[in-house]
Amino acid sequence: MNILVTGGAGYIGTHTLVELLNRGHGAVVIDNFTNSRPESLRRVREITGKSFALYAVDVCDEEALSRAFSENAIDCVIHFAGLKAVGESCERPLAYYRNNLDGMMSLLSAMGRHGVKKLVFSSSATVYRSDVPMPVDEDSPLGSINPYGWTKFMCEQMLRDVVAARPDWSVVLLRYFNPIGAHESGRIGEDPSGIPNNLMPFITQTALGRRPALRIFGNDYPTRDGTGVRDYIHVVDLALGHVAAIEYAEKNAGCEAFNLGTGQGYSVLDLVGAFERVNGVAVPCEIAPRRAGDPATVYSRVEKAEKMLGWRATRTLEEMCRDAWRWQVKNPNGFAE
Figure (cartoon, rainbow, N blue to C red):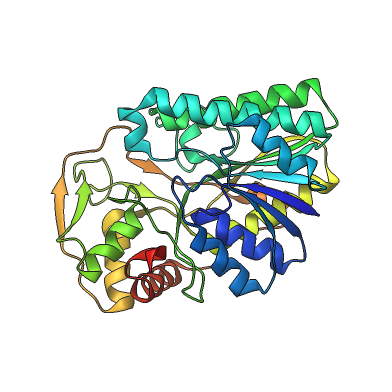
């Protein structure tokens, strides 16, 4: 299939592009490079030895977006593009609602006009209520405690409504847990702009000496060591989940949600300890107040994805830590080099 990938230059987008191209799919990439760099796509071409079209446009620009559909035969869309930081969404809620909801509406309008009926949506575990029993499955009650999560929730509802009106569409909602790690080549990985919002790049930058200490946001949660518990998944496993979702969408109509995680919860201190042990480096830590919008514990049940997509995560926490550190050491300034 020929797949339009919005936000394809980002962390998850680049790793998914590699797996799609290696699987024999074609790709067309849209990215406005707000949170990414063109160098990441050059390295995808280097890793795979394959080329793809690129449109440097904003997904909210429906007219520019339509050119990608008009000039390419698109079979399916993977929609990554959007603002994605929980903390920032609490500070700038209107920017998140405008960007993430407008982007989805522009994309769906363009798909409808060009007869493209298959979509894989980059959703999030933040669509689950924070007070539900863990682990969460796809039928757990939905709701969020931060604007970022609500934008994902609203986009999911938008997609369910579209499928209800157009039963021949196929939509797959992929609810990610916490992707970390990097491609084994060390050529692509997570490259945040400014101060990282996610935990692993903060760990790797601290271990490298770019930051004096890792700030742990809260040590008074009701968890075994007081720090937040999350389900960490290797980004390559996550990328392979998108390949499985594309192949599912090709054969099935309707709208289905799938958790993409490992089913195992690790605390912040668990992750720091594994990183130090695997890589033989120290990560100085300091405790900071809790961050707005962060629940205490979130981890997944993953049986549905294994049964219906034929996918499961196979890479260990140690592999996640090793690959993340390899990327950081080889690219101390990310893609800027």
